[in-house]
Image (cartoon, rainbow, N blue to C red; front, side, top):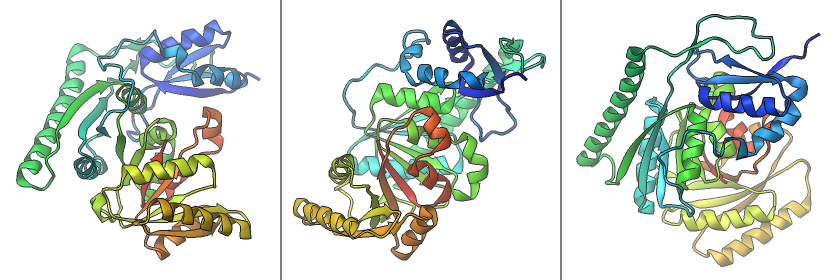
Length: 376
């Protein structure tokens, strides 16, 4: 029996071909499949597939950015070494990305930051025939869309971006949005890959993104761009659920900060408070515990006392939440304590770990309509 094929990555066609070449040079047989275009929630692109037995070796290659460093078409974005005072807002013209714009503009105003609106569009590549896709090494006969179709895709992206730009300018003039300098950027590619690359080049202070909310988790679980950015970004990400009851960040009054008593959590907490000190809110330090342990409460009390001394004006509470079913326990805590947002530190895992053991942030994204602040 032939080895089962598994999807290693979803990329633009040009990047997929580069990765295929790299993998085959390492002795890993690879094929490229077209992504189903019928489900728009799943990111557009082409699938790079390999034998399941080759997955561990392939993951070591793809986890390193070296395979893509010099081979990809050079981008126009300048390389910036230090963080910039910019807020990046990826948009796809959905209702929830508009909601992210409202949040992003108010946050940028408080931080005295500039906004970058980024839209990533995809020009599909169609297959002229479907041959046996299980044959390793076989690549479908790809056919580039004709120039008219190509122009239509690009023109539609430009028109949509111009429309949202004009709408935002009108809302600024009317006073509905605060005055903030913003720039609109259009790029071609797979959304999550281009957002991550642009963020790596730009080093924004913050990424603000919309998400569909917990009622859409079943169809979003495979292809959520926001989830992928949260898991892989190197800057703080604010995820705005479509159905959140909070419409502007200034209404956030109670934030739950999740901690495992890791040193990085404490450093991240200080960074978080210093970055968001222009807003007025209280903080609940939350520890998720598998069993009742008096030491957990003692540790939390010690952390609270330390931060009380550091930030005497900040109202801080401490609680231990049972981790037997942390999603339902946390949701109950959020409801009972009127929590408006959850903040937590993202611990970056490799691709295999993300597939089989998603992060708490990833899980919360699909099971909650509470604002999520992920510190990377």
